[in-house]
Amino acid sequence: MSRPGGAERAEAFRLTPLVPDTGCGRSRHWACHIEGRPDVATLAGCLEANGLHRRCDHPALGVFRHSRGHEIAWVTATGRIQIRVDIEVPRSERPATAARLYRSLAGALASKQSARSNT
Amino acid sequence: MKQMRSLLAALPDDDLTFLGSSPYVYHCHHFNLFHDQTVDDALGNEQAFAVKSRAAHEASWHLLADLVKSADAVTPAERLEIAAAALPWMGHGRLALLTEKHGGTARGEYLHYGFSWQEKYGSRVRRRHPADAFAAGWAAAATEVAYDLPPGSLRCREHACFACREAACTFEVEGGGDANLDTYVGKETFERFISPATVGQNEDTVRKIAAGLKDFVAGIESDERGLVQGFGVYVTRHLANYYDQTAYDTIHMIEREKPRVTEVIEELFGESGHVCVFYTCGGILASPEWEALVGPPENDPESIVVSCTAIARGLGFGHWSIAEMVPGERLVLQASSNYEAPFYRERYGKSEKPRCYFFANAARAFMQLAHKVDWQERPQLDDALYQSLFKSNLGWDLEMTRCQTRGDEVNEVVVTRRKA
Image 1 (cartoon, chains in turn brown, red):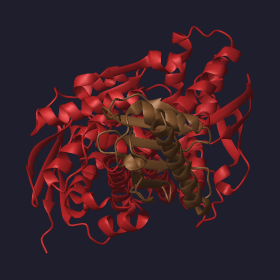
Image 2 (cartoon, one colour):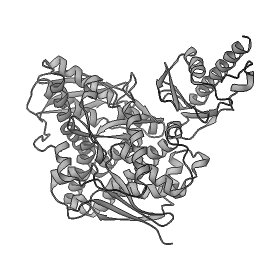
Image 3 (tube, chains in turn green, blue):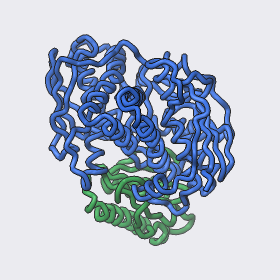
Image 4 (cartoon, chains in turn blue, brown):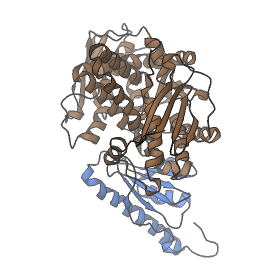
């Protein structure tokens, strides 16, 4: 999200805490929100830098796929994020895997902002 | 896969989809496992595997024949390669076909039934019989088509299965098959047995949502394992004739051999409608994709029934429409086309009783999801909620008032609130 006349604040893209999300997969779906609504290019850049590629090109939706099968779905209008852990990850390891994906997304967003703030 | 995409066809006004002339629909692994389990429960594991693999063989043969024809594939190697590439596109996993003219072996990885059974039940139940009858039927049909063998001359058995905790699924293809390819239910059959599309309540909304869903699901690709994930749910692009033949052959056998349990088996095939609506419709409604395309689901019964009707059309179940909806009281759902009735009429003739089990029970499940689920709370669509909604708290009766299997113009089910 660009703001005329000034750098974006670091907290503008903050993620809400990660919680279990609705869905039919056992511990596969996890939810958070992005506060601040980054533009598509910003979020896509963050995720691609973390090894995900966009597999859905709908303007209202981004679905990004990790090389290990995980997915991150993002509703652009509401900021809803769903982290989907790949089905091959053992059930007991799914919460930790989701947390790792969440941390890497949060870190990527923070570093993106930090870079922008310094320009 | 280019060859599969080139075969995509539809009767768009009737919300039916085809691969070549073979009808196909989207169903998730919860439904697929429940459906196959019902055949197992009715017939026993050995006979059930034979019924399922035969149905898979018959359904797959025509698709594979259409595929090699459209690709102008001449050699057995080309044809086997096409068959091996088609299965992952359908979300069924990977199957390496190591067959020659008189049979051979096949080896599967991530095969839909075995793999998803292990995910859903593997930590709680030890399975001792193979799960991949569909892949077995596919392997037999693919070998016949590859080598121009008489249709139905081969059969296939699964010797090892991932669902039984074995490393991979292995199959043996051999002579002695009993598939019957004489009668085929394809696009032309559907055109003979369906009726002009009905116009229901909220038609514009249903049509608009369904169109968006069709566009969206058409763009979904399988991953490198041959799994298809859409709306956060693992789905198959499955041959509708497989579901129909397994269900109706099973019920007819039970009617002949164990008539006293016919009603129980019919109820179980009907329950597959509950399973589909709960997991597939529920999963779609709760997904980010739905929120982006349509908006978050609201706690409004009419809106949920409209959404579920649109989802049914979007997944290729046919032209379902809402004839009447009184929130809290009653739903009359019609289908001028579905994937059950044309198959029944062509294969077995007119029925004396209604037989669209899936359609009828899906309508009841629409009402349960519409009235008993708090969508704004983002419910976990897990087994506990399923049991609570559909085993101990099912507050709706249904009556199949019209059915095309019986010769009626449309299929119609009336769902009413169960009196205390």
